[in-house]
Image (cartoon, rainbow, N blue to C red; front, side, top):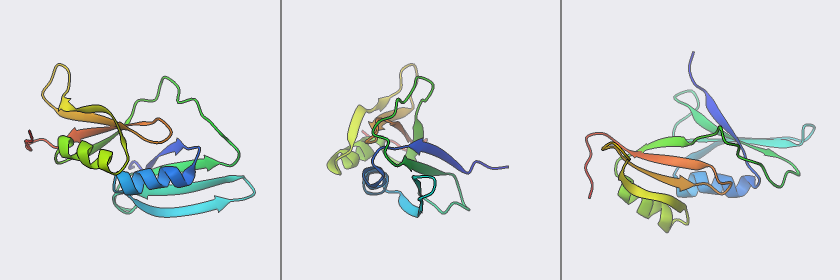
Length: 132
């Protein structure tokens, strides 16, 4: 068995695809409309689906809002330099909601950004890299 994808329901698919591709640097791997079901699926990731887990962005036509719920936590991405990643994300129009720095009660450098629907994305600085 292997992890294939994580699905997020999004309100504005084009805006979400732009965030994950233009701000976070993923690629749009595939996009399919399902007119009979009134939904569209878009898959984004850093590598092909056959090589690793990706995100499935699900747009249900006609839905204007979702409640994120209290059980959802975040998506985590490894970055070489969390400080530089925050600067780059901010420069591309992304929203940094927790600046890079050591996590509470630890030394791992983390940051958090938020996608257009309010989903949190954690940036975790790769071990063995030092910045700032």
